[in-house]
Image (cartoon, rainbow, N blue to C red):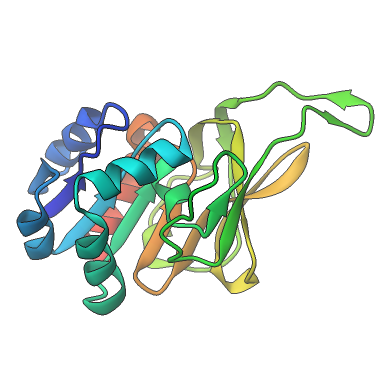
Length: 205
């Protein structure tokens, strides 16, 4: 069973719908017991960094998430805000993140070398793979994914970077470290490209 964490940070029904299309068993939950029994975990989310960390704490989920990710080492996938929460900190807030990945979350500049860039970075964009991973298996040619974010992830260790993009500046659009993987984009909104990523996470990870 795949536990999709509900911490009141965005609509997560589309993730469960995508999983149903894949024939995968999943549940939306904020119950620590269910999370402790899950074979895989998805941490989704949209919104502000501090709000997300506060809700995880209020719901009493921090301990079970750390146990499953760090001790039990079950596969955990972060999506958008969920991926950012896996980092150490964010310029968007003051609270520490989960710290599962040695990375920080920084705000996109609106002007670079005299050129203006709209923030948030929003819409479909291609990605550049930086290493091999089973989660990237069998992707269609020229995969592209749907982004909407004002803050970007910057990994400190090059070996953790899975995918990279450029929007005025280079940023890390996905990371992977052992059982931890995070996507800045929304695979559940990315049609056949995102469907393949979720299929790989469920079946091969």
